[in-house]
Every structure is written in structure tokens, then in C-alpha cells.
Image (cartoon, rainbow, N blue to C red):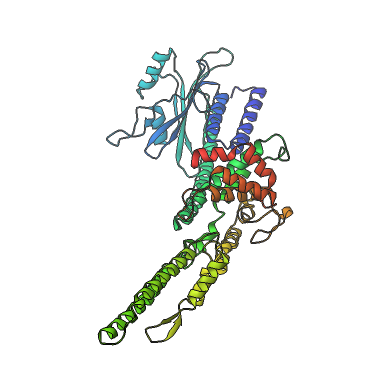
Length: 522
């Protein structure tokens, strides 16, 4: 075959290195460029171009490397100028037989041309135009379709002008080197396909994760875009903690895989909310169920007013019939009606999810509750039911203890859902990271009451992101967004109380993570 022992050893080493590099390289652009460079190294080709097949029947230009011209287009080059994509078929749907790369892809056969300017089979008008413009001479061509294990052509490798190492002149591609390049192209096609499959599966996985998060955010206006923003803050905090070069976290680091795992956990941290009834998630007042129960109480007030007015009118009728009518009854009626209006206003105030409900207000509500109302069955009933009294007694917010338990249970549901999934090794910590966003450093969190030792630092990042997003969200209909100053004050207070990680709060503030997030998303 005309190869010395050293040359054969070199080729064998090149092929071994190719196998290792193909399996190890994860960047698709670097991988394609590595394939082209290795093919040029095997054949000592001066020039090379690599195309990939597209879904619309074209060859997409990826990389061009020409050694003698010092030309590097596409790929990892700073020069991202592109050659035109090549159509596999013309407008009439006929195969493009006039161009080397398209025909190699269509025919699934290697094309070898010893001298382009003596060739009668292909027009090569593009090649000749390139030569004229660049003062180059394209002579010998070797074009290989890259066919994977599914018998699909996924690209084309085109090599030009092999150089004889001794004479430095253009020669032809030897049968051995043709065979080696064909083997390389096949091996490369399989690797590219496998990596594309992995990327496609990851994209599908990411899409499903974001679909779940979007469904939870869309389920209620009271969660806004919480599930979408928590991953953003989580990654910002994690990257800031990795970048810090002083303090307790100076040695903290995360790989890109670990950052991805944490980000996925943040996307899924509230997936358990899918189990919460909308009547609880959306509860904007204490008496709200399917409808706001205060409307039923309004009707009862109207009934009381009606009964008072009817009784007064009956007294007036008696006066017209000759009986004595006390004119002060009108004043008493108006006073009673005013009193009912005030009581009704109190019920409306208590129905709102305030933070400052007083004992006096609750006691006044209980007095109102004891009023008697005659039902349609002529039965005497308390003005407010026991269930209504319990709801109106709520001191903070709109949720009863039972409803809070339902809300809080979403974390347990999240953990159960996530622990049921078969994770690859790189994602196995998702349940603990996602399921700990309501835990506290001092052990007072839920659902598991983790202590500081049990609460991983990466899970604390998600917890901090969750709190900050909830404090600053400006798309919740039930509350106004806090200013950054107010939110940071609360975070500092929680830090002092031992609820959240002090070191992470330091990074969050010193690296101005909150400012970057606010600029882009608030």
C-alpha cells in the first residue's frame, strides 16, 4: 500500500484518537470540526468542507477549512461567514446531479474525482467560481456521505487536494485513505446521531418539565409566573456562589451538570400543587368556596332589613286604623338599619385576608353571629353558621388551618411525585432539592423539619429563590409587590432568625443578584 511502518503507526494512532475524541466530545460544533480536521489529517487534504442534512432537503454548510489559504469559516472560527446551503433537489423535484456534495448524499455513494477541470460528469460551477475569486486550484475531490446505523445520510464530508508530503504537490486520494475516511464518516455519523438523539431527548425532557411548570402557573392567577422565575433566580444564586472567591463559600463549585440538576429541581419544586383544589389555591377571601360566601350573608342582612321595615310599616298601618303610632319608631328603624349596615361592613372587612384582625372585631362578629334569623321553614337560626364563624375568626390571610394543611401538603406530594421517577445518576438529587424549598435552617420548616445538617446547600439555594420570588412578584392579584428594600429587609430578618442560609444571603446581596433579576424580570 506504499506506507512505511511509522506512517501506518501514525494512521493507527489517529484512528484510535478519533474514536476516543468522538465518544468524549459533547459540543456538536466542536465535534463536527474535529471530524473534518481528522479526515484532513488522515488524507493530508489541503481543504475540507462539512455539510449536514436538513429536514427541508438541503445540505447545510457547517465548516470550511483550507490550510494553504489560512481559511477557516464556520465551526469554532471567529469568522462565521457562510457558504450557501446546497439543495438536494431542484424546483421540479429532480435530484441535484450537478453538484458533488448533494449527489453523494442522494446516491449514498462516495464520489472521487482526480481532476475537477478534466471531469465531464459534474459542472462544478461553484468550485470554479471559488477558484477564480480566491486564486486557488481545486483539483482532486473526495466526497463521502455520512451514513448512520439507521441507514440515514446525516451529512457530507468533502475533501480537496491531498498533498504529497515529499513533493508538496497535489496528488490523489489513495484507496487505503479513501477506506479510512469512509470508516471515519460512518463512525462519525453514528456518534452525531446518538448525540442528536440525546439532545432531542433532553429537549423533550426540558419541554415536559416546563409544561408542568406552566400548567401550575396557569392553574391560578395567584401563582403568576412563580414556577418560571424560581429557576432563573436559582441559577443566578448558584452561579454567584460559584464565582465568589472569598468568605465561607469561596471553595463552593458546581459543574454544568450539577447546575442543570439544580435548575430542573427549581422548575419542579411546586409540581405537587397540581393536586391542590383550585378553590383553595384561588381563595381570595375567607368565606370563598365556589363563590364568595359573604354574598349569602349580604342576603341575610337584607332579610333582616326587610323584616324591620315590614314591622315598621305594619305599625304605621295600625296608626292609620286608629291605633296610636309612636313617631319615634321611624328613628329607631333608621338607627337599626344603620346598625345593620355597620355590621355588614364589619363582616366584609373580616372576610378580607388582612394581617391585623383584632380581638374586638372577632368578638363583635360573634355577637352578630348570635342574631336570630327566621328561615323559610319558620325556624329560628343563628345569623352565622359555625363554619362561617370559624372562617371569619382567621387572624391572618384567608385560609383555615385545614386549608393551610392542604396547601402545605403540596410539598409532600412534590416529593412523592419526584421520588417515583427513574432518574439518571446526574439527576438523582432532584427530589431533595425540589422538596426542601419550605424547610428552614433551624428545623422549623416543613414537611420534614430538616435540621441544618440534613438541609443541603443546593436545596437552600432553591429555598432562597422561592422566598425572594414570592416577596417581589408583581403579578399576584391578591397583593402588591414588595420593593427590593422591603424584600431584602425580610431576608435579613429571616437570616437573623436562623430560617435561611446566612452565607447565601450574603452572596445574594453582595453580588447584587437581586438587582440583576429585578432589571430583567421585575
